[in-house]
Amino acid sequence: METKKPGVGFGVLLLKDGKVLLGKRHDDPEKADSELEGAGKWTMPGGKLHYQETFEDGAYREVLEETGIEIDRSCLRHISTTNNIVENAHFVTLGYLCETFTGEAEVREPDEIVEWQWFDLDELPEPLYFPSKQVLDGFDALG
Image (cartoon, rainbow, N blue to C red; front, side, top):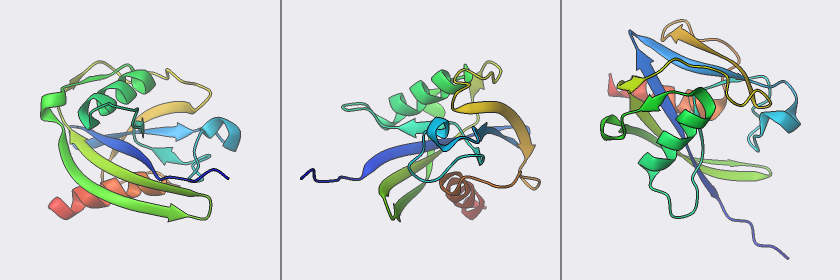
């Protein structure tokens, strides 16, 4: 019998002119690639940590793979850590804030994310992917 272990992932809150970048996950759960029920929900760029990868390198890789945006690793700021346990999954999610980056958001993984949009922090779309909501809550808590 295989022993299940928690996964480690991260979400990156890209902030520009008071707006946050969010992507719409595919409506098909098989394509949305989430064990935390993310199909059809809005999410920030992020993903799973690879073996022997630093958090900063993982955040850089995922944002670039998903959006084409290059973040400045030295400006990443850790803003939250959550321990998400649901019926069939367990993820520790690290939230990061990044305000220094280059490039424009483009759909790089259309089977997973169907569009990227910038949203005012006080006018976020629904439904939000709950790990992304937790990162946003961590940002709000910084006040």
